[in-house]
Length: 311
Ligand code: ADP
Ligand code: RBF
Ligand code: MG
Image (cartoon, rainbow, N blue to C red; front, side, top):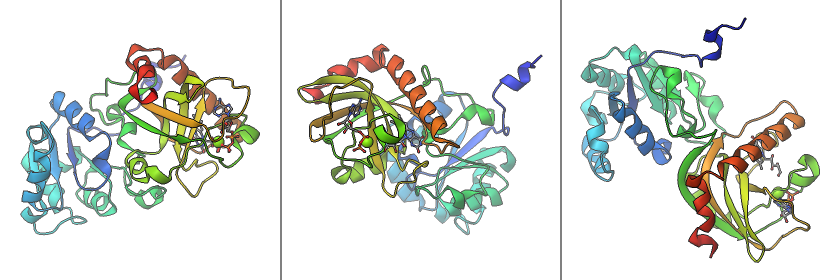
């Protein structure tokens, strides 16, 4: 008989406090969600940054409620040496009144990860540079974005916003004429993806982590359809560029290259992954399709079918 213990998600390490930096790309996505979640559950949070304290204070003042959420704030001008020295993190633990070993550091830079490990802390790396996760192997865990953080693996309270395998996000739009892709969606996978040009969206796209997202897709003069897509470099094919590959969950009789396609992206499903075989990649994409298909009937997602972006 299988014991209950083997079914429960394993706790990697026990931590009681979290230390963050607000510099860099780490906190573009999901910082607000993380800070509100931890603060709401009474988990002490420290902010430890190489930036001088006045600079941090200014940054904090731009975000409603953040200043009050941090128990401790330390700038690079308050210790002898900045990261990669452990000083900032050790001082943070001291002011939090906890052992370094019960602190979880979340960092996007290599000096930051180095500093966290040198301080004897648990470290999650969220690499700021794409395809660079191999440089962060000294971290206890490397994740693609804060969307993939599972606090319960660190004995912290789990996020409560996931619903039926999906994470609601602040909806965003992207659109343009459908362009030619790598010519393998239909041919190699049997899954056509209506590629969009990323040329005019490079800054928007750099704000969003790679991964599998879903939402609604409008094709002008045709209609509005459910959609699931991958954004990123498609590890299995290791593309040189970040691409947007929406699969519309509808059978079309013909191609629609050149037609205007508009997307309202409403949720996140998972990070992009590599797969041992083409069959396993295809099976996973079909699973994504089923998840999106049913999630989009939930009121929180279905209402965006009427988004003004489609008018
Ligand atoms: P490419 O590499 O040029 O993107 P694909 O094999 O991925 O070629 O096929 C994508 C094309 O197939 C789209 O541009 C679109 O014209 C057409 N198409 C037909 N059905 C769909 C669908 N359900 N979702 C996305 N594209 C579709
Ligand atoms: N490619 C990958 O290499 N890894 C993935 O995890 C992955 N997930 C995908 C999820 C969805 C919903 C879709 C539509 C595509 C995904 N692909 C992934 C992209 C696939 O490789 C791509 O559509 C083909 O390369 C066609 O250009
Ligand atoms: Mg395609």
